[in-house]
Image 1 (cartoon, one colour):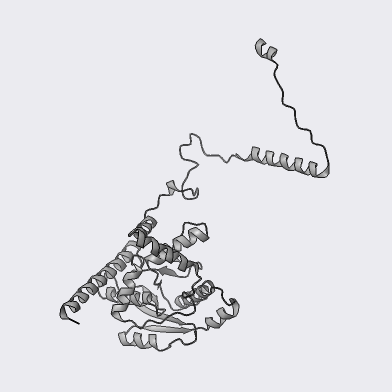
Image 2: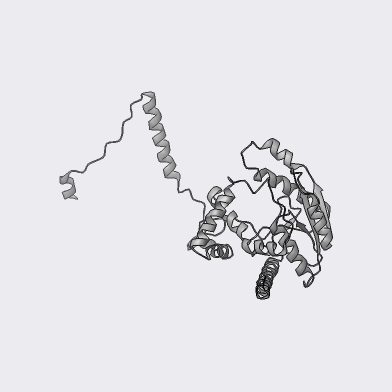
Length: 314
C-alpha cells in the first residue's frame, strides 16, 4: 500500500475516532450518564458495538472530569462453539478488570422456544435478569449497554407498528425492579461508524448464532425499511432521531401528557358523561333486538305531522 493511501486511512480513522468520542461524551453530558465515583459495568457481548463502547469509555476515562471505574462483564450462555477464551484474553491484554458469568441459558431457550420461532424475547429477558442481579450484588452503580442511535430508532418503529406506542430506547433508565440504572453511552452514534471503527481496530468479534441473526425477526424488517429510506432520502434516520429529542405533547393526543381538558376551559374541569345518550340508544337497540328475537312485537312511535292549517294559524 502506498504511503499516501496509508496517511489517508489514518486521517479518516482519526476523524472517526474523534466523532465517536465526541458523541459518547455528549451523551454522557446531556443525560448525566456517569458521575463521580461510579462503578460502571460494561456489558461486553463480543459484538462490535460493545467492543467500541468499552474502547471509547476507556479513552474518555483517562481525561474525564470525574473519576469512575470500568468493569467489563460477559455472560457466557454456553452456546455451542462459543470461543470461551477470546474475551478473557483480550481483556487481560488491555488490563481491564472483568468477570465472566457462566449460565446455560442456551439450553433453556432451546427447550422452551419451538423450532423455527424467534428466541430473542426469552433470551434477552434471561440475560437482563442475570446481568441486573450480578450488578446489584457487586455494587455496580451503572450498567452500560451498547445500543446505538439506529437501535433507538428501530425500537421506536417496533413499538409504533407492533405495540401501538410512541416509545423507544431511552439513553438512561431505571430497571423495573428499581435496583439498577441502565445507561446507553452510544445513543448518539451511528451503527455504520461503529462498524467502521471496529473493523479498523480489528476487535476479536464473536458472532451470535442464538439471537439477532434469525432472518424472520421483526427488528430485521424494520432495519431493512430504515436502510431503504436512508438510501432514497439521505438524512431521514437522523431527522427521526432528532424528533425523539423534540417532542411536543400538545400536538399529540395523549391526555395523560397534556391537559387538553383544561385548555381554553372557562370553568373548572368536571367529569361529565358525554356518552350517556349513546349508551341509552345502545341499550334501546339491544332491547329491541332481544324483543325481535323472542317474537315480541315492537311498535315504533309514529312521527307527528303538523297540518298546513295549524301552521298558518301559528
